[in-house]
Length: 225
Image (cartoon, helix red, strand yellow):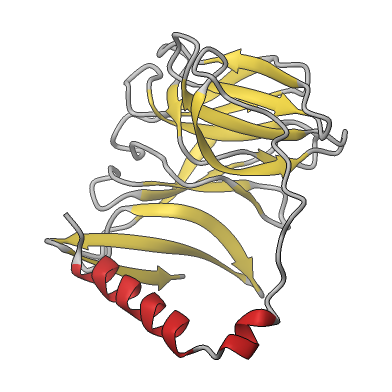
């Protein structure tokens, strides 16, 4: 079933394509050099999460929400197509990553899983370029649950992230300080904006997060600080 928002977007796109002049369309660049670098078969993972990131070693890193009989994987792939599975999730160390990875200033990669861990509410993890996986934190509901957005490293050196529910409200914003445990910063209790699901980002001196509220068949978005 299409939501009202999706129908509106499709109609808007159709109108744009109809009314753009042929001469303008003729000036659009034509991409002819697309090449498949790697292929996921299920055995090596499927359902990739978010964007790939370019590591300082020149390889591309990403995560899969499932595959290879597991509950998700982290992989790296060279620009020439050499694909390596760095780790697999089994539930106890997390399950079903959804938000992608971030490479922090220490050279390691950090991410979250949407479930699994001690309380099955999701985890924060660290993985090295060689595939050594460390579970840093297990969400317990009170500190948030089901993280879905990617983490973000601020100029203060801390990593920040969001959970889509928990914290006694509509999700949480949490912080991972260097050499310190993951800790909640605040709970989101605004009843008009629920379930933060996107990556935090830095704008001037403030940290923002995009938040999504699903209300019946119509989807509405909100940005908050």
